[in-house]
Image (tube, rainbow, N blue to C red; front, side, top):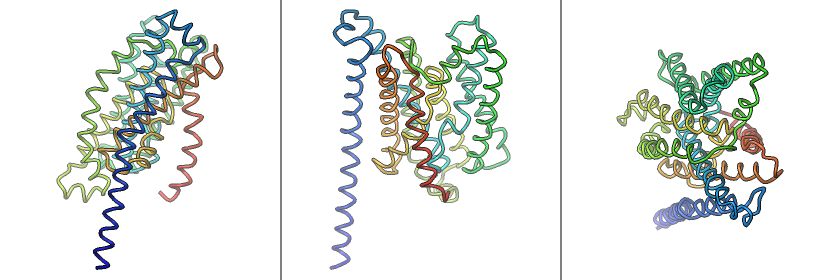
Length: 333
C-alpha cells in the first residue's frame, strides 16, 4: 500500500511538473514575446503618434527590427541549445566555440580590406567565416571522436586566436574601423526588411531540422557509449548538429553582428523552465533568445534616446554576470 501511494504521489508530481512546463512553453513565453514586441513598436525616440504620422518609421523601421530581433535571437538560442546538448556542457555557446569569432574575422576583413565592396557581401562572407571555423575545428579534431572536452577546449583556443586576429586588423587599419566596430559590438541599427528576407528562409529550414535532432540529443546526454549502444552514430550526429548550430549562429551574426551571451543564457533558462527534454528545450530556447534580443534592442533604442547604443552592449551586460554565476555553479565540471 505504501509503495502504491508513493508511486501515485510521484506520478502526480511528474504530472504537475509537465503541466507547468507546458504552460510555460505554450502560454507564458509567447505572451512575453508579444508584450515585448508591442513595447518595441510603441517606444522610441519618437512617440508612437508622431511615428505613426511618418508611417515608414513604423512599417519599415520598427516593425522590421522587431522581426529581425525575433529571428536572430531565436537562431542564437537554438544554436546555443544545440551546442550545449552535443557537448553536454551548460557553459558552451557559439561565442565560446569560435563561431562568432570566425564570422567576425571574415566581416572585419570585408570592412577594412575591401571597403569598396557592397555590404550585400557581408552576410555570405560572415557565413563563410563561421563555416570555415567549423571546418578548422573538425580538422584539428580529425583523429578524435569529437569528445565534449576536446570540442570545448579547441573551440575556446580558436575563438581567442581569431579574436586576436580581429584586433590586429582593427589596429592596423585605424581609418576604416568605425563601421567594423559598430558591427562587431552587435547592433540592429539600419536593418530593414532586406535583412528579414535573408534570415527567414534559413530559420524556416533549420528550425525543423533542429527539432528533428531532439531525440538524438537526448540520447547523447546519456553518454557516448549509451548513445552508441542505442543505435546513434555519435561522431556523425555531432558533426551534423554542430553544422546546424554554426549556420544558425552565423546567419544571425552576419545580420546583427556579435550579440554576446544570448546563445549561452537562452538554453540554460529554457532548461530551468521546461526541463531537459530537447523537444521542449529547443523551442523554449528559441523563444527566450528572441525575447533577450528584442529587449536588448528596445533598451538600446530608448534608454538614451535619441542616441542609440548597440544592442550587443546590453546582451553583454546581462550575460557576463550570468556567465560568472554559472561558472560558480558548475565549478566542479
